[in-house]
Image (cartoon, rainbow, N blue to C red):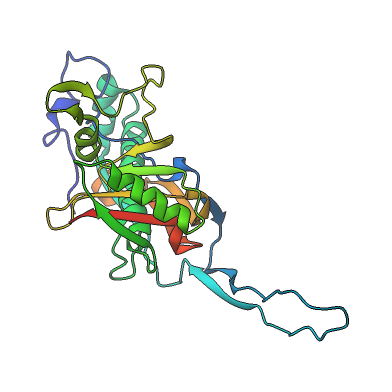
Length: 286
């Protein structure tokens, strides 16, 4: 157990410093903001769905109608064995008191920081978690999603991805890609002797990027695999998130009393699934 003290964190107890704490530069959480369906539940969640519909056809008056069956299956989320995301930081009461003159309420600052850290881990898992050892299996790892070939030098590969999604009767809502992949696409020129950009940016869109009419989520959480870039096309209306617990803060002011310290614990527990696997089209470089 490592307890943070004034000796180990001298920058928080300096006599003459600005009363603010500079946070590291990082991306904003984007998965939940993209609009998936969120269902609050403390236990396992089962979402029934129709696997195949009934057969219909043309029949003459008085003809016998052939009967057919509708078959069902389900999507299961948040099994009892699924692990939660947790973080714990311990501060000595001396550091809490002395840092007050520097950054204000240190417990509040650290709590906010821990919530951000937990949210970052959650985002990475919801997008691309492996599902190993009872953890979240992200939407890019789900079974049955559509795959295709990506060529960052040829936007036609993105149009092919759109065509594949449309062929699956999917109305995609977002592109998802890394800053590097998006930059590579934006750098494409009309021709070797024509410096105009092939994908002309709309100066009126501000920081909201679009590509072929769809919003672009720029995130680090769709990393290259074996050095190959990936771009995803997702219909987030078909993505479902089971939420047992939002990032929740607990101040443990008695647990570490024998060390005159306070603990700050943040926990969260989520799961994710795709109601229709074809709602995700994942393009990977050849």
